[in-house]
Image (cartoon, rainbow, N blue to C red; front, top):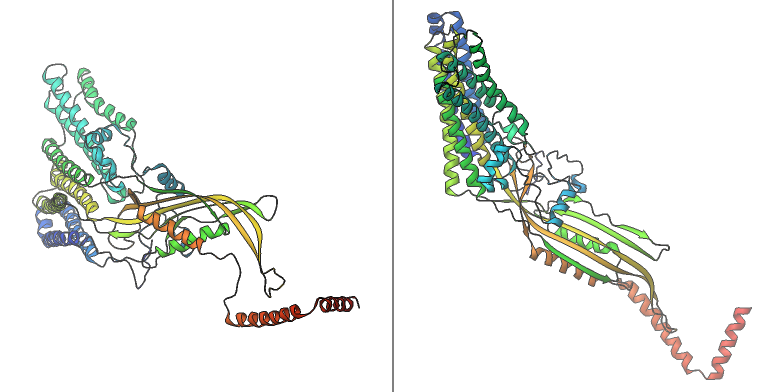
Length: 580
């Protein structure tokens, strides 16, 4: 949600300061390379001609823009981390009266899903993997299942892309071995070169068109694929050598390859190995810190009280208000609207009410262990080194070659581009571990139903009483179901604006016996202190009733002093006066 100012806001520190410092350092280096590249443009145009000169202009501007982009990212990460009173995102649609006009499109759960999790002691956040290679990885490292969605999404993309890349390499090696033992004719240098070109194009399609970008890994739902798409890519990878073999046997002439892909493939697979290893190590170390409990404190009881049914729910509202943190309203995911149903008359009926509420999530300081911090640092440094080397290669190769044919253009730009791609992938993975934040809160569900009857209670009906109190007493028989849990939730923070408006996920559900007992005791205490007989609390009313009582008391004494004959005559005179 948007920033909402309050003088007593949440105290949450900026988690991106170190990451921002790394971006500024690399941005300065890349910007210097870009400035040097721009300053040498004139000599480049004079030496290599107009076409090469214009290509060098584009490369220089690209390097300079990359440096400015990194500097901007760094300064944004170092700037103030704005946190209002409305953060973080609610788990479901917040129906609190004060927040009804606040839109939270990233709320992940529904109120029914939260009820299902509390009643069933389960966590629907953790969904099983779908594609074959992802299931294999989760079988080896089962705790990966309990990672936040953003980390599971990058694992999905990483495992999928790496697996498809290895399938392409396997098909290439099988084709090469089949030609070596004489099963096929795929031993000619030109044919192997075209197989290498096809494998290079496959890698470009896989990694450039399905990159590890923040927009993808931070999607609200888990990324899921199908094995059908993987099978299709495998079939295409197998068809290429088969078609080449058929072409040779039919006498089709194979043209010369436009470039030698050997070095490009070696560099690409080395970088894939580095990114995959770093990504899986980080995920494994983070998964070891997970504690996926699904435990809930429960209280089931039958109460009989001389109170109105709505008093039960009012008592809960008052006690929940006492649990507010910094007087921030609790999150209401199911409104407490008790329904009273009359059953044939006005003095009896049934009722039912249900509510789900979450207390204000409190920031939970969470420090990664030393090994995970080291891995995160290595991932960040490697990513920045790859990007800086990429910018340096862009500068050196584009300024020291004549860019006149496809071979020169490929050799000048393929290696810097692949380094830049995998460097950005590493920075994306590291960023997820810089921006994870944990919050602690209590989730409460209160469900009750029962019956009630009304009766009259009168006090002060004696002939000598001066005041009388008539009261309607409601006798309520009530069955309650109270569920209380302590939640540990995670959210992926973002630098800049709207820092904590992404989806928040439930990682751990713990028991909260102390809070449950506190709420039950306070509600019972509130109900026990209810008054059934109406009286006065005004001093003036007390004085007036005292005067009336004294007059009645005096009259009563005088009446008792009369003889039986006088009492009879007094009664007869009064009756006569009434008749007249």
